[in-house]
Length: 84
Image (tube, rainbow, N blue to C red):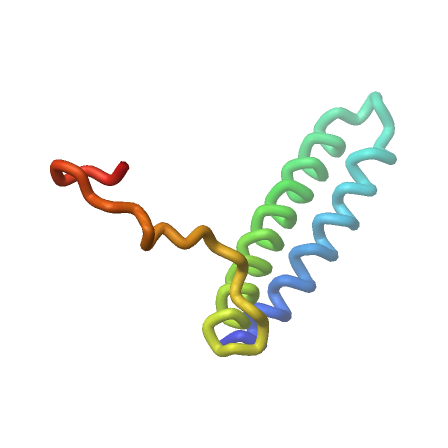
């Protein structure tokens, strides 16, 4: 499953760069082409970010990558049912 997500990640980022270039290089007179390319680039970026985060989560869960540094909140005491 992670290989499929990795392939989707590569395709999505490729689409982002390709359609982003088309959006910036489109003729100003052709607004519909510019808009559609920008929308496709945004979709590619969104899917690319989502798949990247899924791959990072999987790498941390399997031990391939070190977990991110997190704050240790075990020293906090509970006071009246609320954290201080």
